[in-house]
Length: 124
Ligand SMILES: [Cu+2]
Image 1 (cartoon, rainbow, N blue to C red):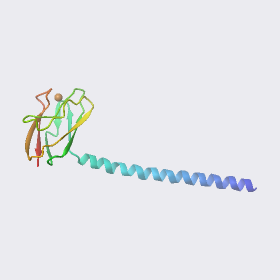
Image 2 (spheres, protein in one colour):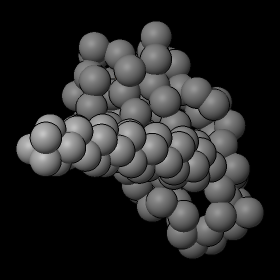
Image 3 (cartoon, rainbow, N blue to C red):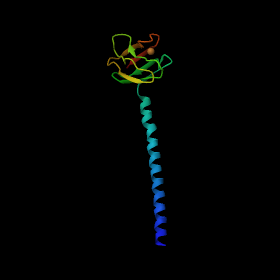
Image 4 (cartoon, rainbow, N blue to C red):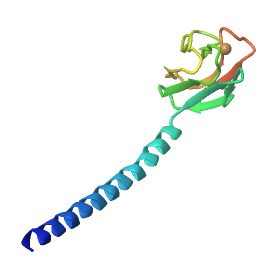
């Protein structure tokens, strides 16, 4: 009799702790989209179908810009004049980054492999 009660209370405790860990997991999952939203605010250039997106990006002086290559071909983000910035070759499916110039202005950039790819970085 005593053993049956002990077994019953053990089962109850076990299912309670299972429920507790489930709710902990769901609150952890809900914090993930918040950090993803912060990433989306970061300066980013995507290269896809042999084009830069966006074509014109405005960033703060000295801001770090993430460059994502969604093509299978390698690309670069290279300032057209003065070597203001250059990611070097970014292989297909990879990402890289560069630091925006510290001087405000408008900087044309291109891909050294595909000169038809053009974009403009505006430093505010
Ligand atoms: Cu390219």
